[in-house]
Length: 461
Image (cartoon, helix red, strand yellow):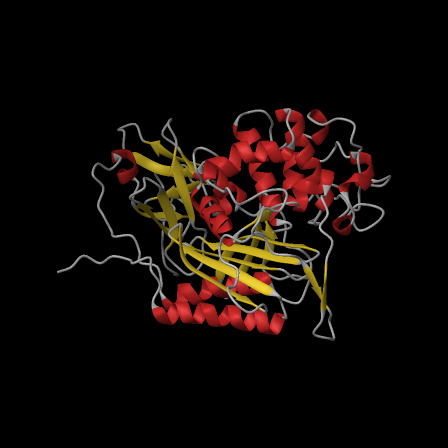
């Protein structure tokens, strides 16, 4: 029998569906051009474009401005500083970048847009004016930098990411873009991502809302605001970056750190269902599918990047119009087209070569009071706790060197699971965040909080 394998190449019907979606987006969105790419398994498996100009349309090598997707790149630089021990996410900004008048905000709050800072700069619209109009951080923040108390709510802030870019410059002693190129772009091979446009690149256009006419948008250097939205990139580069956001790259950030970036770090934005934000990464649920990535816009350009970890599919959509084409919606639909038409093959089940005997001893049914749970040992060495019934708390646990396990998900994330042994060395019960799990419901031989009635289980009468 032939071994089952997942071919990364897409079927003709899937490719046509992707091309059709882009054609509809360009037509209905009235965009001068749109370029898109889909990656699966970290490999670009489809590229497509539509243009209003006769002849060859843009390909995956043509630069577009990507706006706020730049924030995710800035967040990667900050997480590198954290992983190197140069800062803690709980540090107030003042510790590393004094004198900003926003120093009480923590680095984590800036990354997650929970610092309470204003969304925009004072004065003229920063996206259509030169950065030279805001030469100092005081010009970016203004006299009243806060709109909310730090840590209380999500409030998207471009100024917050300007502060993070300045933080990177202060700790590295070099300009933000220079650090970005050396520490992220070059290691990941993103040689078509840059602060200034490099040919071939698309021009940015404003399309009249009520007439089929357009005019060019100004292209400004954003100066201090660059970490919030300066970058230009291509669908190929961003597809490669999407793979990094799923898997990490030890030359830049570990898989564990990029997973942390994709973990919710702020409450959903009021009025927008199923939205959230991690550390420099937007989070959403579309059609039941969890997506991570970022959208972006600057006058003349729209951009979106989404990845689905469960499907191992990423999509990038870039357009050169100020408004009209919902790039984030289209990118999510491209992911859905591939995931639905060609679902991911699960990894083949394989037994352990040598299972941890202590972890193996914990497998099987356990009871929290009368609530039945089961512990399973997975091939990656993790323990999984799941309720047997319809209700209960499930979690994954990572083994620690001293013999305990740390919760990775759900209610028990960050909590410690320990196996408590009897005098004869056998496991008597599990201790999880003060909860006692026993092999039998309310085991009288275990230290059940409040004790167990000495008459034991009985009926009525």
